[in-house]
Structure formats: structure tokens, C-alpha cells
Amino acid sequence: PEVYRSSTHGYVDFSEDITSADLISAVEEGYDSADLVKRFTTVTMGPLQGKIELMNFIAIIAEATGKTIAETGTTTWRPMYAPVTLGALAGRNYDPVRYSSIQPWHEAHGATPMVAGAWIRPEHYGDPEAEVRRVREQVGIIDVSPLGKIDLRGPDVPKLLNLLYTNKWSKLDIGKVRYGAMMSEDGVVMDDGVTAHLGEDHYLLTTTSGGAGRVWDWIEEWLQAYRPEWQVHATPVTTAYTSINIAGPHSRTLLSRLTDVDLSADAFKFMQVRTGTVAGVAQSILWRIGFTGELSYEIHVPAAYGLHVWEALLEAGKDLGVGAFGIEAQRVLRLESGHLIVGQDTDGLTQAYSAGLDWAIKLDKDDFVGKPELLWQQQKQAGARLVPLQPVDPSIVPTEASQIIRDNGEIAGRITSSRHSPTLNRSICLAQVDISLSEPGTMVSVRLPDGATIQAKVMSQMSAVDAEGTRLDNDTVPQSMITFAEPVARGPVALGAATTQIGHWEVSAQPTTAALTLEDQSALAKIEVRSRASGTVADKLQTQFGRTYQAEGGTLVIGSGPGQWHVISEIGSQA
Picture 1 (tube, rainbow, N blue to C red):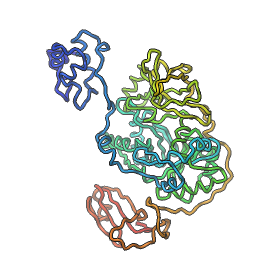
Picture 2: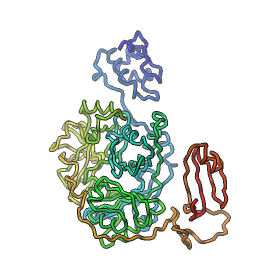
Picture 3: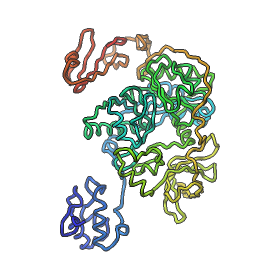
Picture 4: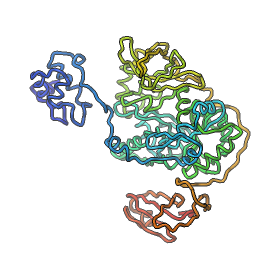
């Protein structure tokens, strides 16, 4: 356009104050490639890093040199292409370490720990392949507490979900669960998860374990900066709940022994949610999903009761062969079932159609985040595709990130997930490959880190085990064996002294005369109150933001924010 001709001095790079005349002058000085012009003028070197101005910059250089844009090419991209916060780089050694309420059990039973974001999680308990077989043949339980959880309330929650996810949410009935894929504004896969409609104007949204903070920030940005008029209250509750997945052919039988919820196939179907009592813990949330490819239930209970429910499941399922399984077994199970993991099978450039999420994209709904880019992706049908691969030699398990190469050595993709499948007794993989190599039956070359090259075949089904999904349900109605264990709540600090029970809490009863002590006060009664910053509720609580007030009986009221209070009282009280 005329604005970018040399005579107009049109601004191309707003952060570096570079005009079209500056770029053309650089070419006339002999800097006739994009990288040389970049260094001579500092174009694209500012905070924008070329994300906005790159194509206009390249178009001007192309015209000035008499070449096409394709012949001119772009500057050399270097890490990090996807934005990374300074906190992630400088503060990696200062992140708080998180443990689930079941951590004492994991440690006592020989779990191999692994770092997963801010969490320490059990990788396995000695034999991950045996754990896979247990889930396929009997029943297993896994601690999935790090799963991101955000409580959404208000009449405009469906509007928010429709805005942030690619599929439709206006008609999600109470008692139903739906999968959703979340995109950034440039159509890149940002996160995914399931959301349950718990009650009128009440939803529970889940994210990937590593995406909880990012999604929470994303929701708050949209609600506060762009849609402040929407009536939505979002509360991060990841650490408020202990989450346990029960998976395997006997999962229905096991859970039926500890809950009053009707688990029969007709009453509680796949992708539905219920609330009820589990092991004596009221208002537990249960839903049916199938990440492992087996009949499974995911339960969410208050974190204080997490260890109790975990131990109750293990006790109730002894005759069923129940056992714990870790992250490694879960990853094998999901790979056998053909489910992607955001951040594992995607990266900062992976577009929705490249990840095989076509079925979750509804372009016929109103505007949503990333829609213009998704329309462009659909029309162009280019780039990479996520495909299932099986090495010709079933004994070779390619290292993840091994390169997919063409006959001329050109890189055309990479292995994103790779494991030995104990169910199939062979290696299975997922890979991002160029669309030209994505057709089922295509043979590709995989270059391993040691330089060796192997052959692998693109498969027709993402799922290598039970592609029809028949294992996700089991119509056998279990014999009613409902029993209730008395819930016992424990704080996150392991008990090492004599204890006593107050209400449902097990607390230390050993006095100390030490000059300095640390006390686990998890058992204190705590209530979060949110209301208007002024009015009846604020007057009753008698304190303002940043101040505290001690009521009769020792109850402490803390003004923790505008219209927000923490109320803390004695163990067992009804604060």
C-alpha cells in the first residue's frame, strides 16, 4: 500500500520507530537481505519481536530488491518464539513446591517422585507396565489433584465458555460434562479440559495440570479488561480439592461400595456429573470421563478428606485387585487410547487443526477467541498434522523429539510421544508430521538421536487399543454394597506425635516448651466471605480491607480484599 512507499515515510515498526524510508535506505546502502536490514535498522528487534510488523517489513524489502516475498524470506527465528515470562526464567528456583494431601501415602509406599510444574507427583510405584495391566484388567486409582480446577458461578458463565472455547456451551444441561479446547488469539492450542455443569449458574472448569495458572489469568483478563459487565465469579480451587481417578473394568463395582450415587450405566452415563457422598464425605463431585480408555470415574473431594478417601478406596477394593498407578502408567494408557496432551504433543506453534481438534471446533457460532485464525487454518489446510505412528520394528521405542525426515534429509516433523505398550507388546507413538506425510499408510523415516534411521507407518486410528470405545462403559450393574467409612481429616504436615480427634480432625496432642514452634493449623474452621464492599454484610463483619477484628469467642475476621473477608475460628466450631 502507498503508506509503505519510501516517499511516505510510513511507520513499519512502532516500537523501534522504523519507517519504510529507513528500510529502503538500508537496501540502497547494500544491506539487501532481511537479516542484514534487521541489524542495520533494528527493525523487529523491539518488544514486538516481529509479531506485528514482520510481513510489512519483508514486503518492502522484496519490492526494493525486485524479489518476491517468498524469495526474500524472513529473518531467522530464535528461541523463545512463544512468549516466556521473566518469572519463568528468573524465578524457576523460587517457585513454591506443591504436594497433594495424599503425598504421605505415596512416600510410604515407594512412589518414585517426579516434578510436574509446581507439583511433586508419583511417576510410578516400581513397575509402571504392571500398573498399566492392572488398569486394563482390574482397577487402579491415580492421584490427579494437580489437575487445574476453577469454580465458575453466575448467569453469564455460558457466554464466557463460548468466548474462550472453540465449541458450543449454551445448551450444556445440568449434570453434563463437556470437553473444550482453548485457543490463543493466533489460533494456537493453549489448553484443554472438561467442564461440568453442577447446578444453576454453577460450573467447575478443569485445565491441564501445567495450565491452571495461565488459564486463570486468561479468564481474569477477559472478565476484568474486556467483559467487565458479565456476571461471572471465577475462583481457582485447584488446591481446595483432592482429585482421584478410578479406572478399569472393576471401577464401577469399587466405587459403588463407597457411594450413595446410582452408578448404573443408564443412570450415570459417560460425560455426566453427579454430587453425592463418597466414603462418608458429603458433596463430593463425581464425573465419568475416559482419558485412560477404560471405564472410569473422577472424584473431587475437599482436600482435608483426600487421604481418607484414597485409603478407603484401597481398602474397599482389595478383593478386586485395586492398586495405585502413577503418571507414567497414565501416559501409556492415554497413548494407547490416542489422547493428546497439550504441552506434550503440542508446542507454542501448534495450531488447532494441526492437533487434530477439528471435531471440537464450531466455526458456525458467534465470535470467539482465535476464530479468525481458525477460519484461515481451515481454508489453507497446510502445516503439520498430529498422527499415530507405529515403528516397523516393534521393539524400537523412538526417543521423543526424534526427527521425521524426508528422503533428502529435510526435517518434516518430530515424535511427540513414544512408549512401549504392554497391552500390545510393541512400541506406539504420536508425531507431528508435514501434512504431505499424514495420510494413513504412509511410510516415514525417523532419525534417532544416535543417527540411526528407522521406518514407521502412519496408522489410520489415533487409538491403538479399543478404537470403538467399547471399554469406556460396562453395563454390568454391581451388587449394592454401600458402606460408609467415618471420614478423618488430616493437615498437610505428617503427624509424628500423639494425636487426638476433635470432630473429624486428627490433631497433635503433645505440648511443647520450645521457644519457637510451628503449628499446623489446617484444622481451624475457615470461611471465605464475599459480598459488596459496603452494606449489611460488611457492617456485620466490622472490618475493612487490610484490617482484622476479633469477635466474641475468639473468631478472627480478616479483611483480605475489597468485599472479601477470611473468617477463622476454633477447631470444630461453626464459624
